[in-house]
Length: 139
Length: 139
Length: 139
Image 1 (cartoon, chains in turn brown, yellow, blue):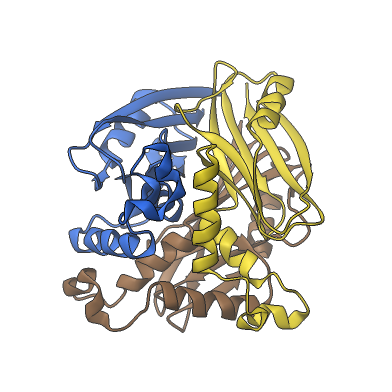
Image 2 (spheres, rainbow over the protein chains, first blue to last red):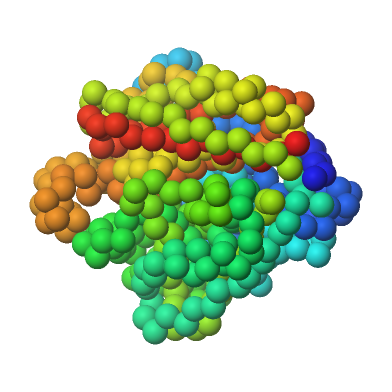
């Protein structure tokens, strides 16, 4: 069994954003030389997500609006977590809806995807450097 | 390390449905001959889910009602994604709540499940052919 | 490829709770002797979650309040599932928001975590013995 590990770094200039990281994950897979196995891609921070969906800007707008309805950023006082001096209580909730990680099959050296699947980094508390972990195991 | 791959196809006649796919995944595991490892089961489409919960029709009714409250199908104009000509904006949101994939342990050639765990395909934009991927790795 | 399996048992005296199980999962990893691979940690019950987030009591209070808004426990009659004689319909919904499982990379014999990542057992229908499965594969 072979394994591969890489960290992808992000410094998103806004509080929230969705970034298509499929090309970076695909480059990791090529670099690993692994042909059959599994790829784990996970946010290493607890106010960010990695998820798979469509690369369509209208949908990303819908996600942003919907997550803000489900877990509003303001008022800051809404969240006990913010009494620690943070203002990111909402980000910890939004991340649970969108998820921490994805696991993707590797087949014939490719990400084994359906027609529209793309991997996204979902940032909910940006404006600082944060990481995504790519771990691949297989042969 | 051995690997196994199979696509399960569905053509659900309604917009939404929950289908118990545990027997099909179990048949894949038997066919693979793998005794120890992990099974990944994921929707290959971004308006569908694979999740684990109870095979109880009342609960499935509760999920349907709850997801419709969290992310209503109508009005179609509610979602910017639908300006692309689609009417499935809600399906992309519902799928995030229910999840894209499950990873299940394989132990002694069996799906290593608790007493009530069953794997479901969750369709949120049916009436066309769609796929689920089963990928197994192990020995 | 090596594999390791262990069940962690819980008997939470309240209906709902969040328990940090990172030390137990870490002990499993040490016991396994596996240095490179993946750890799957999943609830074996369908009214409980395993998830990764921050070990901060204010945040856990926020999760509790938020999940109760998204899927209230009462009135019991709100859920068709409860017509089976159960009163845990809400727990099946809360568990979908928080998730069934996490997959964590193993690197150099360690859980490959970002700075604040901790693994939690989320109980939504306690007061009885329930299990979490830890399955590790790798070399």
